[in-house]
Image 1 (cartoon, rainbow, N blue to C red):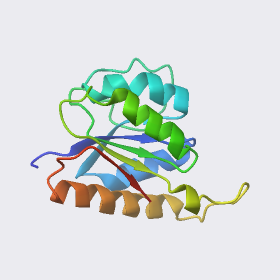
Image 2: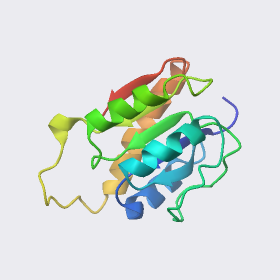
Image 3: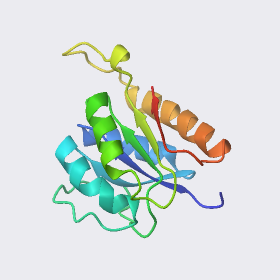
Image 4: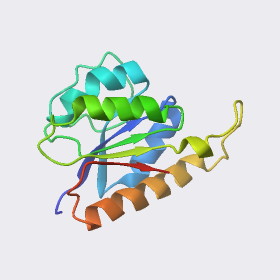
Length: 148
């Protein structure tokens, strides 16, 4: 792949999204940041076909370059796997290319009120880079959900 892979980050906190998106460059370009499930449900179908999602959620995360369809979507641990699976099912077939969905493993969810470590965004970026890189190295030919 000669250019960066367009991806989306879905997380409840854009404070984590911005440094993660910067750490994933240049191989992975975060084009859009989604702050909640309802936004994900309305915006992801547009992003999968390379169209501006017309998001009412204004933030400074992502390049906002909607000229290429996104190929991967990373969900923070604040999203439930069941919701992600339903969303994945509902948009299957929209994208011309396979899409990787990265979601938090429910068995590894932190307890309520747990405070993430100060380097949390670096840990998230490392895991995302590893999972995205493995998928790309394998050819990026399958639609799949990978848990972290």
